[in-house]
Length: 60
Image (cartoon, rainbow, N blue to C red):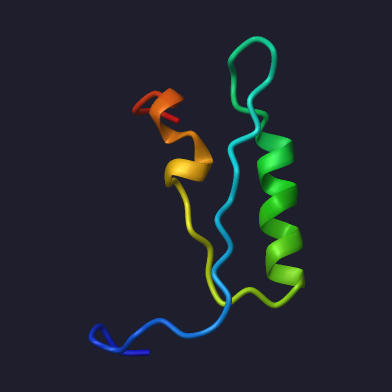
């Protein structure tokens, strides 16, 4: 795929798993990535509104 070609395929929006302490649960996020790739996703979309990016720090 070149830089000017439209995206094709499945690009799931990943959710940000946040624990009761407000921290990202990295293991759960990794599980989403692994599942999506194993299921045949062509790419991943992160972070966007469904990912609750507004609650993440710059480091996260």
